[in-house]
Each structure stands twice: as C-alpha cells, then as structure tokens.
Image 1 (cartoon, rainbow, N blue to C red):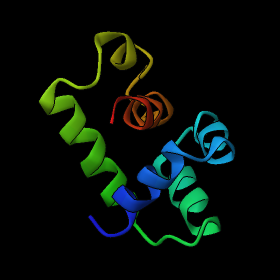
Image 2 (image 1 turned 120 degrees about the horizontal axis):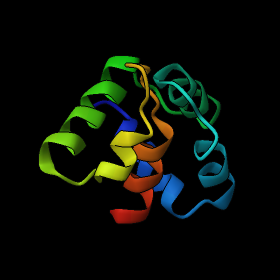
Image 3 (image 1 turned 180 degrees about the horizontal axis):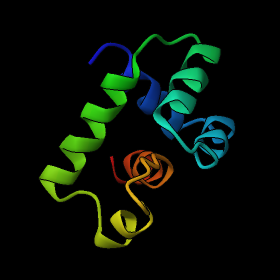
Image 4 (image 1 turned 90 degrees about the vertical axis):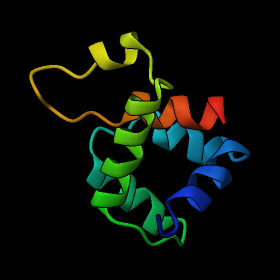
Length: 85
C-alpha cells in the first residue's frame, strides 16, 4: 500500500501530523498531507485502507455515521487508525 502505512505510523508519534489529519476531509487531503511530509501514496490507497478498516470492523458505527450523504469523509477513519494501531 505504498507509503500510506509508513505515513500513518509516523503520524502516531507526531502531534503535528495527528492534528493535521484530524482536519482532513477527503482522500485527496490525506494524499496532500502525506506529500508534504515526504510520503507518496494515492487516493486509491487511502480508499483501500478505509475499506479494509470497515471490513475488519475496526471502524465503529459512530465513525460510519459521520459519513453523510455518500460523501467520503476520511478524518474519522484516519484518526481511528492512528489511535487504534
């Protein structure tokens, strides 16, 4: 999954990245934040990560409820990822 996992691992120990990720709204925002930090991954990588978290049950119903009207909102998923893992 390219550099996405490495980026999320770095974010776990970096309060600045954590704060930035808590404000992202789309997969494109996550890609941009990763690029700023020197990582390379795609929106498809972010979507695959999201899908895996949903499938595994690691994402709560509360997080899923934050996704409204079919709009992909990544922030709850990324925040859950960096705090759970």
